[in-house]
Image 1 (cartoon, rainbow, N blue to C red):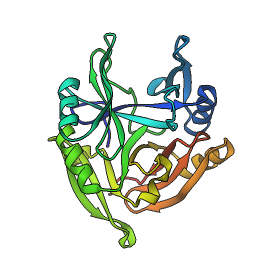
Image 2: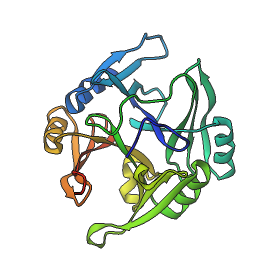
Image 3: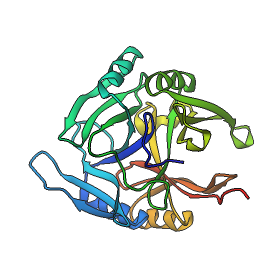
Image 4: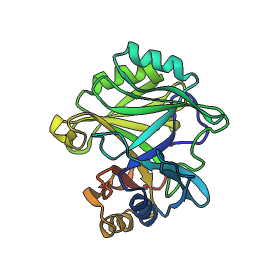
Amino acid sequence: MISTDFTHGTPCWLDLGAPDVGAAARFYGAVLGWDYAPMEESEDMEGGMFRKDGKIVAGLGKLTEEGARSAWMIYYTVTDADATTAAVESAGGTVRVPPRDLDEWGRMAQYSDPLGGQFAVWQPGTDTGAELVDEPGSLNWTELYTSDAAAAREFYGGVLGWRFSDMAMPGGEGTYTLITPGDLPEERMQGGLMEVSEGDLALAGGRPYWHPVFAVDDCDAAVEAVAANGGTVRMGPVDAEAVGRLAVCLDPSNADFVVLAPAPPAA
């Protein structure tokens, strides 16, 4: 589960870079029931916040980086963004955006892992992150597709202090690695990583990529909304034992995400 009790190494925020902010706001409003509130725009900034039931769940901004694909960026809480930056560089990663203060709200930085997977960190000030998680219409899991699971474990374990455990995929389709932050108990497991072929990474030009999993009440209804609003369903809906019913989707600008109707807790 993901909690708003954000500690070092836990996912705390996500935002979407979209070529058409208005279209993205309408799409996610239809699929996830989000309300969009634009921030004051300037010549070099367009975007705002998504809310679910009045609580902030994610951010949205204009995609401005030349050659970049539209994608969700996931942020992880850290106690010291500068120390994390040094750890990223020492472990062979790349600093995409050096640590910078966002007024009194906090300090952020963005990176690429050694194989090119992009992620970000947030050192909280007055703002700790999303106000709603692990509920329908909000983030409840994070996932990395990579061509080298062992390298990913070494890098992220060293940089963010994660622990890992492996489980066999159904049907003998490989191994799925589960992620738990730091010294937190197993019930705070927050995500997973999976080794795939480079061909399966075509969406990101052969590089690894992170994507969010959003909880929904009804996976099939969410999938219908994706298709009806210009998105694409890449896989599913399918039932995953003890996990729930899920589907892998693309929004109209090909940003990837998963919708999951979680299985009820075991009796």
